[in-house]
Length: 347
Ligand code: ADP
Ligand code: MG
Image (cartoon, rainbow, N blue to C red; front, side, top):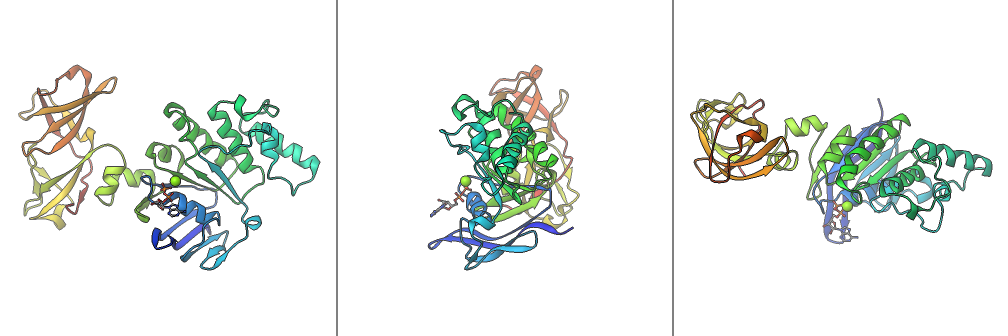
């Protein structure tokens, strides 16, 4: 299948500052991608480059097989056919919902425009709200209007920049899931930008993790969670701790919870490495011969997330039933069950 969106070695500079460096990614038609990464890593810069708002200093961006941006060559705005949705919704406060959605349809006939607006509002579940003003709607409803407005002109791709961060956290994941269904039903290709992994997981087929303007890892949510390529990805995606371990010459290792055989440790045999431990890798075990002191704990409803101290002082996480109820300073008996061994170069 041909690539719908393709970035090839894209770099963007602000003066002497490199905001994005050699970024490559591609999306198939109908796929939802995500640029994920900490604040300031260059996500918005890349999205603006795809929208032709930011010139490239190297590389090329193509949409449906033709170049939309290259060095010294950026498509004029009216030919981009890109829909944008922003964090602050950016609705026109003095226009009602219907006229907000109608805004980008000046190229259509009047009669067609009205039908398109009403179709779009139906699509986002706001069929009755065409005459309402943005301030009369909830944040989630306003974001749906923004989405309807972006989809109305039938763009070739929808770009969403932190579209849910103005909403409370309960609503965010739910709306991310709804927006995903909506985009899929319309066979839209979309690229989401967020710093929130839960939003990325709820919405994206493909995630590109960015740090300091460069791609760290690209893959499905499952790839990034279960097969992180380095300690940055392991620390950024999901909960857990990357601890320093010494791998023995025979590939075994022992960080205080008994001898473990690391199946992939050959390349690390006889030297130190970083080992990812998820909170579910460390289990409460009433009759274990090993107990670790509790350094901190957080109530999680049915469970406590314990922070435990290893004999060498390093801290790990353990998710255990609330019935364990060990206070800070007390000892929790535990055992280690590693499904996947994620070892990295020592930091
Ligand atoms: P993100 O969206 O991931 O938070 P941005 O793409 O907004 O990151 O910014 C990436 C880096 O580029 C930041 O260090 C930011 O300060 C810088 N930056 C963003 N826009 C400009 C600009 N117009 N001029 C100079 N520096 C900028
Ligand atoms: Mg941003």
